[in-house]
Image (cartoon, rainbow, N blue to C red; front, side, top):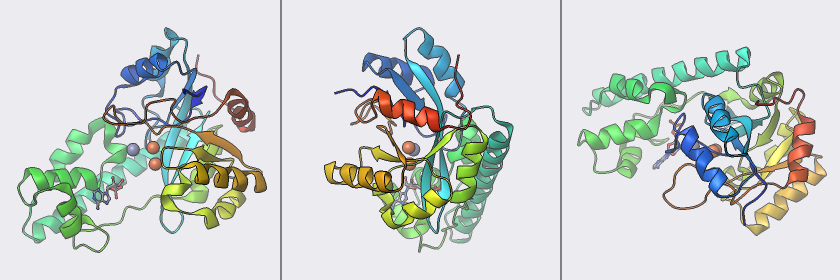
Length: 278
Ligand code: AMP
Ligand code: ZN
Ligand code: FE
Ligand code: FE
């Protein structure tokens, strides 16, 4: 089945493989009514998606998926926010610069380890997707340079948490991410809590002002869906859901996971200043 609304998707503006226009065409062909575009740490694809959606009768929700920190990395979705909010833009531009600087630091360590790669080529190639540049890009460069046989080996020997070229990224604190989303008029939903297995931290996030939990997601089986619905009920949080679409290779497609019209309107009503794309 296709859901009424899918509130989690990626484009080439972050690490998806479809342009905003191609994503919209796919979502419309799936008979989806509403799609949130939630690229990693950028709202850069939202306006292009909304323009493309007009001729398809598809509603676009302006969104973002912010990498945030709560003792480890978590992802927080911002939905119904102003994609051009100046504070949001400023903070995300700073994050992108930090990630580029981190790639240079990793490259310097790799040079010292006898496996040089071209950091500037990675940063330049990332271009508009720089908000998400990081270890996967370095791993592919290590493979291309012949220093390792495959990406897994790059992580095991160099880039993994206990490996010699590991440089931690410094995401935004979770509380700051939630406040940033509210400041831009949107609601904050905890993305795929089942991936990080962070049930015990959800009350802390609720204290920070979290509005919702992403209940339906490809990483959540039926047991998790009902568990997160229960936690949301106890903490008076709303529900979001989406397919976290990245690529046509494999499943899922936009609308395979999502929410119905009532949950969509509850979320919109919870936004301090819900943004409408014309
Ligand atoms: P970064 O945000 O730059 O620290 O990169 C994190 C990303 O690296 C994750 O989202 C994964 O896609 C990828 N990654 C982490 N560990 C591994 C691994 N062992 N093998 C392959 N990819 C990995
Ligand atoms: Zn992604
Ligand atoms: Fe995520
Ligand atoms: Fe995602």
